[in-house]
Length: 285
Image 1 (tube, rainbow, N blue to C red):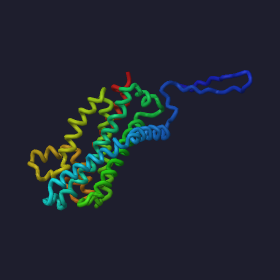
Image 2 (image 1 turned 60 degrees about the horizontal axis):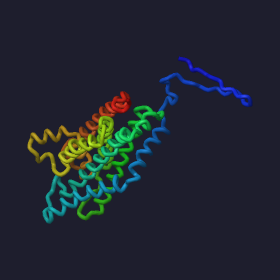
Image 3 (image 1 turned 180 degrees about the vertical axis):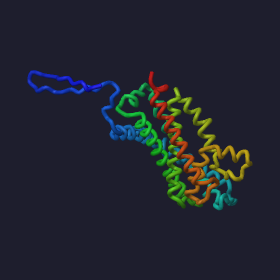
Image 4 (image 1 turned 90 degrees about the vertical axis):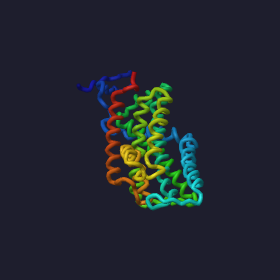
């Protein structure tokens, strides 16, 4: 279909061409970097305005787990995977806090828009579905890394705990993959949910149990074969195991396999989120 042109004329000015594109033709034919950055910054500023609740509070809550376990053990100094128990659980607590907060951030974005009637702010701007998904996911991962950095700093200052990375690439990769995994699950939850109770149900009955039962506080190798198989079917397990490898140099699962598995799962989830956004399911009337 050709582009139609109209001419607006006034008595004291030259003619000005007005270009009208047919319906469905994109005016921005490449990535809308300005719009992508704007939506990303909007999401970041949203959680940063209440950083005491979204960043510092989760860090303190996670640090309490470490304090309780180290104080409860007292003079008993068990070792797991060749390191002290405190050094073993510290990396798992860090990435557990990262993943839970990535989910909390992305599961809130579209849901609050639907409840408050501001979902149009996500649907009307000249952003493609992929750009909206990228901005929401990136903002959730940003919050995850801010929370993770805060937890790491607090643990570094806590006596008797060593959180010096042994393989920095593994810390970054599994931190990114784990946060992205929960960010994408959060986007899907935000699309599906119709009220905050729905998102809370996913948090309480899916995310929290999967995180706590994925080897955060114990080595999966010590479990019975049946429970080992259940743990190995949990993608959270590979994120925590690989992230722990980045700190202590040991893991209870193949690191390369876990890295590729998480990448594949994230790609599948990203495609599913994109298709849901494109369909407008529970987003458009």
